[in-house]
Image 1: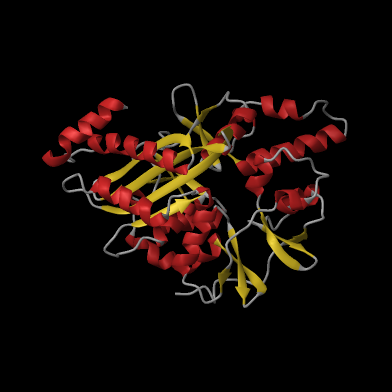
Image 2 (image 1 turned 180 degrees about the vertical axis):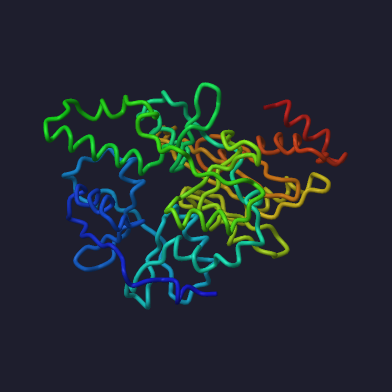
Length: 381
């Protein structure tokens, strides 16, 4: 299936010389676009999304051009699986669609999910959800929430009480919406203060509650339908018998990633923030992960997701990179993360951590040929 009937020529657009304040107002109107196309002198320049506004300290009177990000261009005849990959790896919610050299329109993740909805009943939520969840407590300050969203490249944080029970959800939209309302109150004189006041407010004051949930045994189709019908970007996964326990999170991005799974002889690898790769290539990453998986009996990797995140810290000009590797295998999900200066070092550290986690999987045993080598490696960590 290609995207010729999924893409649309209707999209939100803004000039690069406009103020960021206008962008914020566009995200708050009734249409609430998932992304805005930025043009300059009538020519396509890039896109801007709401998550960028949350992660930026740029003032409203700054120009849009300072926050423009590139998004991979797609064609109307491109396969839906490849477009899904493009959206996941770029971290964008929309992709510009071109005919020849001319911008024709956009394609959004929602449009893709709606088009493939009837085919998603063959997957369960357990096949694609993220089991390792970053949570906050009700008294975690908004400033800390923003840092956690930025550091983990995520858009939502489940909120738990002192007993670890799910009580709410804080999203990038919640923070943006609250900040806009707070600034409006200050301008009207109803409340004094500045941005510091917003950052000090506890998550409890801005979280959404109750939280939309699903279970690991639910079909992906039912989860996606729930998200689309209610304009949710994700759902908390809970046990069948207790919807107050956070067992995981499933998002629209997880579903898009599942669309890229292949039945090819070699495993499929998804890379988020692929632009951070320096000397590494996708094929080298796939080979390293496959070599690790081959050391263990009865474990087949169906899909690998590798995510890179750049920190501000540098060493002799090389940025500190965080790498997370998550595998979907016939033994369940397993993940490892690590940091290092440059993508190569970060990936190798994450891969070592992944091997340690693989050993914890029930029923997985290292081949005798690799046992001594692996134990020595683990001893050096």
